[in-house]
Image (cartoon, rainbow, N blue to C red; front, side, top):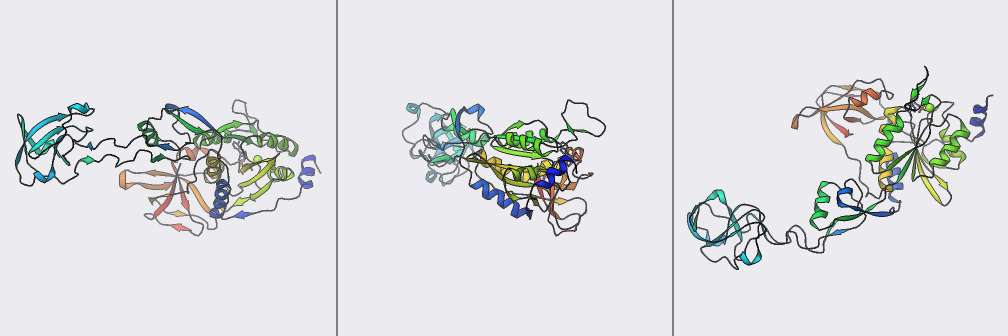
Length: 423
Ligand code: AMP
Ligand code: MG
């Protein structure tokens, strides 16, 4: 009995818990829901894109702050314009940003003010007739159409009232939320600090990217796909040195990895004799929520928690096959990482597209297969990309989504609407 085998045998086997995809996902969501908000920092608005908001943003004044014309045209009392054509006196010209003293106090009967998009509508007027429906005759203007009360005006405060919440903590700041923060005068925002995510790649066959691989070795690619996915989900990746398929070495590396906010181990979670990650974690008295999910790729995925002092850390054991690693990160690690990043939970949602070519698979597993969504506009279609299984990284570079196949479907005909997960 060799050394490795001795250790393998010496550790009690991990109780296996293989869940359906939905149950496994729910377990992650439940754990994510209990994660407390992280520490905060203040950043410049320009540096806040993609960060998670940590403070409520309130409207500092009504939006819009005045009744805003949405058109270039003429502000009128709509009740005066029932008989068409009609000709009114032009008493003012109001441009966007017009000084208050240049805005007429009132628009009376038979009067109108020329007004530009974004300008304040004067008192008395209750609608704006688009310039296209008028013809100007010196100081008078002829209207060719009537207008309903309120037309082409956004009333003061209609979008938001002063003091009301515009943005809630927990949102990921995108172009729309940043624009709203800017309109409320927030040049700096409080955001959550990014969680540190340790990436531990395991495998005796794995070498660094800049090493020259021996004939039976392969370069480490998972650390790099995971680093990109971690950054994309709001975390800071910390790549640990590749760990061997040997218990003592794994224990040391896992101990280092558990100092981060989240640990992702790749490889070593399958059923092989040298797949020792679960054994190592179980020696460290880890709690396992599941040790497999009925999915393909990614069936051996592991999720658990391991105490380091008073602060238990979550970990995922992601299968080493590169496509499995990518898929299981998206399905399970991402929601937990988003919670650690302070982001409010969101459900996993799929789009639907028409299947271009028939699919035949075996039943029993929920599948997330690399696919290409193509076509244009409402004619979008999706089809599987040719692949050699979950080790085929090249195939995933030709894919822009995953087709989601329920475990009970054996054959899906071309033309059927099918669930798609974008990547
Ligand atoms: P494992 O999950 O350790 O059984 O590994 C499954 C497959 O993924 C094997 O073919 C490994 O060589 C491969 N693999 C594991 N880790 C990596 C990695 N970091 N980069 C690329 N391939 C890997
Ligand atoms: Mg391995």
